[in-house]
Length: 297
Image (cartoon, rainbow, N blue to C red; front, top):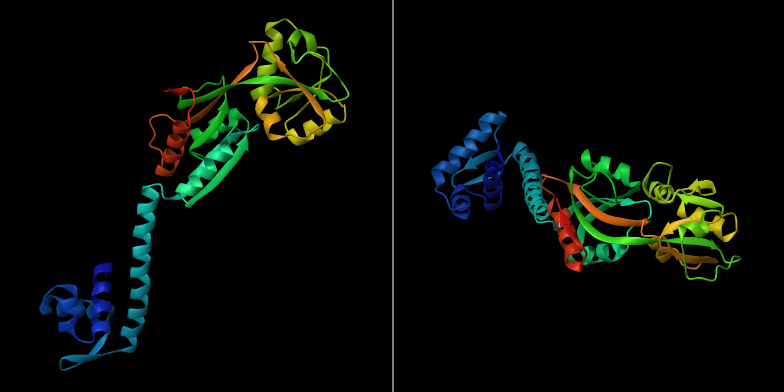
């Protein structure tokens, strides 16, 4: 049996006679009678007991009718859901976010939710290097990463280039609002991220280009813990501007680092030559609409 035959049977049961069911289905009576007979032969049992123009549904027919209703309803729901997912109205949106998060991400997600309330979200946080791997193996569709990284496999939408800040406990007062790497390299530094990855790499490279050997006492990728340590005067750190925007209220002082050798481009990536889901495409389009630097492939 197929879904078409089930719909025929539903009409037969609900109309009580073949002629009325045929009229409801906009077809002639003989083909509908033949379809009923075909179903009975396939199932090996009578579905209706005929009595002139009218009939009585058998117990087997009642069971088939119950399941026919369920199956046709599921089919209709499947059609609606598939169409909605195809249009980006519903379905999952999988996004990777760099450890330090992204400026305005919450704002964009709220806008997406307003426009597409049936979309669901899976948001993973990790280092940029690992996020690239997750996009490559299609665990996630989109990722916000910090550059530079090897992005040959991806289309990249550049969002902004973010400055870095030197952060200390408020027990320390450095009079200038801005500092250089040369001025801070002797302070006890706790670097964010993990050695060889992400922001840790950017900071280390910036010092290396200036032939400076920073006084590194540790590393910590948990930003809340890192700021707690700095607040307690355990050490100092260098963090992207986003960290300060998203973690206000700590008893710390921050000083913009003026070195052009230390900045962090942030980009939204997706797999090159791979069709995005409509939900993901809607998200990308909204980010572009809100305004940022540009796209390259």
